[in-house]
Amino acid sequence: MLEDHTPASAWPATYPTGYAVVDVETTGLARDDRIVSAGVYQLDALGRVEDHWYTLVNPERDPGPVWIHGLTTGVLKDAPLFKDISDELSARLADRVLVAHNAAFDWSMLAREYARAERVAPVRQRLCTIALSKELGLPLPNHKLESLAAHFGVVQERAHHALDDARVLAEAFRPSLAAAAGGGVRLPLLECRPLTEWSEPPATPRVGRQAVYGGPSSWRPARKRPACPYPNPGRYEPGGRLAQGMRIAFSGDTSTERELLEDRATEAGLHVATSLSRLTSLLVTNDPDSGTSKTVKARQFGTPVVDEAAFGQLLHDVAPAPGG
Image (cartoon, rainbow, N blue to C red):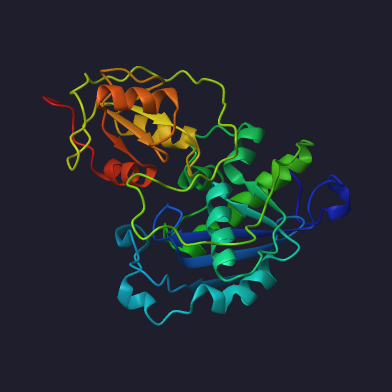
């Protein structure tokens, strides 16, 4: 691993000259959801901290999952609007690679906020630390930020606080960057394409409709998972709780990396199914009206369907297996 005194010139010439480690907390995951807080750590070419910054943001709507980010309407009512902090944020992002944990999500939220404000985010590339940890082959039990932090001995003080999450990620990114440089690993940089215009969604959006943050292709190699130890209790009842053993299928692009969503489902005691049948308990998709084989079968079989945001809420309260 490279030490602090290693000059940037000794690192691969293709590596960026600076990074902006970002975390945003939001009202949810859908296209019309908003940012409620943002934290940024500016790092130099070697991953050393240069500065940090934090702001609350008035989302001009309900704050969403307060039980996650802790920001109530009362806390946010006097906070600045995104358009009022966009100049300061831009100054901290300019000429740097945006680094985030599940960067596709943070970038998509920022891009839409900038478009609403009729601005363009000064970001050209992003780096996802989940992708980097995979490139490095880190022995992590899952892809949660807390697992990455624990691997590098970083103490997480306030989970889901934008500034502390950004700090934790910055501290974990530095040794990751050094390991990548030392091993000649090519950084998994992706292009950031800003939105050039914005239109508000319909006043009554379709149920289950959510933004698609992924690229046009969702192909990925199959991953064998351990068999679910619980019997299938049957279908999910809308408005009720998930129960261990239920068969969950996913279809289409998601804001959170699919593998991470599947990991969370497996950890909760659910059976992740690769196909949809009459035995499937629930289909999770952000585009229920699409013509994918799973959504078509779900309509034929009457399989319950929820979007990613709703599924995330259900995962917080999974019932034990019947008789367990």
